[in-house]
Image (cartoon, rainbow, N blue to C red):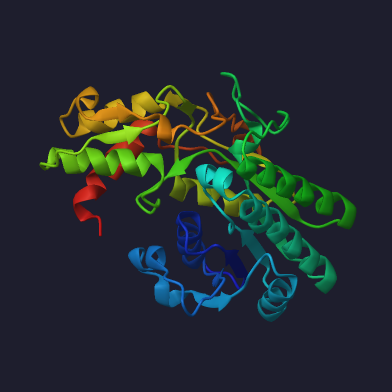
Length: 322
């Protein structure tokens, strides 16, 4: 498959950015990726996927309008995938100002740049399931009201509504992908799924460590990142810009994830895991689950990997981890 399209990915060094770049390169796109300082940044995820030399890298600070305008004007992309910004919910409680600025102002600057340049690029914004807060055992869809309970979620909610506002007021092709949790071997070590898998593996090969975790009763909808970036691409291929929930539709507790992860390595999790109040967030979401029916109906997208599949893939990757 070949195309003459050019795509700009902000946050290309992250999990989603790397997998999305790989997907678009495979479709024949000319791919540009941004970092605040492309010359000094490390793009380990791109290297791990074997595509580091195939991506055009440039510096752009989304929270600076001039920097954003300059980069977009230089590339003049057909599609923009905005994945940059502070990504940790936990860290947002410690750094709320940086979180709000990097996510909300960054999104606004890209939208304003497109409006100023009168560039007809299609714009994808990485919204978040965190915007919904507690779904109370009911899978959230595109009409479910937002109830953000962290600075990160507040920022993502504001950015989400900016995208919708610019779409309607300025007739832009601007869409939100409301993605629920999605994992891969490229996830940073600070994410709980990586903490669990890596700890279980180390213990299985002789480590005497104890894994400290917070609330094990929380329930999440866990999907597979490479499938979710395909949904991002599909959202921008639609004839009309719309917002979509991207999820598996299934929910499992963190305790279930821990249990199955340790069991994969022949371990009983209760022998190695300690619940620690220090790892409990100030305002945790008890239940987070999505309803991806609209994505199935309109995009032909459906998650194929579930939590058990993800645990197996992550566990098998441990002996190969860098």
